[in-house]
Length: 328
Picture 1 (cartoon, rainbow, N blue to C red):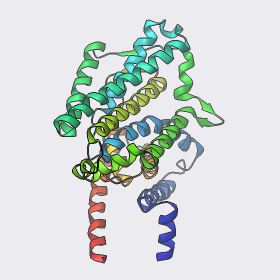
Picture 2: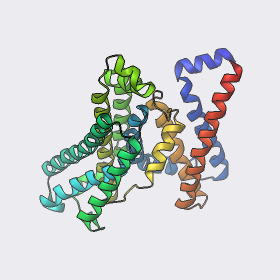
Picture 3: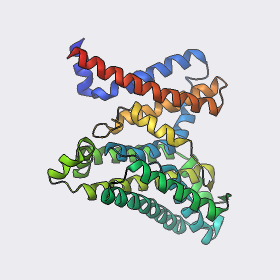
Picture 4: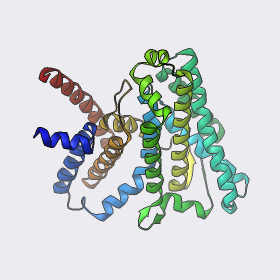
């Protein structure tokens, strides 16, 4: 048994056991509960619904690894989406060409980076708590978006944008391909780059990281900038999926991104965690949502279940840590 566990850890990593067990449980429970769950329609729906949540979770992941948090990811995504929408409208609306889309996407990414830059600078140089800083940014972006749109939405975009949200390549949804590319990029960044190493060091002990010669201020600024850019990517995907943008799109995703990170083995205090277990955890949460929908549960009950699940994950991790101490 120990040899089997050691082999599993060598192949997948110790932090993959929880997400894979949760995935198996969800498949078995809902597979028996609904005859329509284990079908191509369900998995196709998950493949199209997962990407914007997945990219937002990646935007949340890096700040958590530093021991911080970015509560502004959903409104950063919305402001980035609005930036793209305004650029398209200024260049012909539904008649806008690919050049306008590329310009708008670049501006959207720049807006996301600017949001992260401001938060990173404040956190790095004032040592203000990331929750307070990102909460302030969230309130600012929400108020700014409501003011500029007067609470309405912007819709009517060129037809060539639709495949980004609804198209497929060789049977694989385009937004899912974007998510996979972001997962791979995040995995490489965190596991094979100096910035990734520094991110883990800061999350483990920021003072030790500073004494080790790491420019902690620079790393924190870069981490929050990358978080903002990733949120902007999610905003572009949401614009293409919904064919509209408004302040508040995906607001409920904030809870789920945190839950996915913790379910995926990310240490809430920073310093430990990997991208791939978080990706599996995202699939679990989306399958859970689809299974509840098939059983007739509305979105409000699904949100309630996610909240309870977050508490359960915290308790199980605490019990696991206690058990390990007893065994040692």
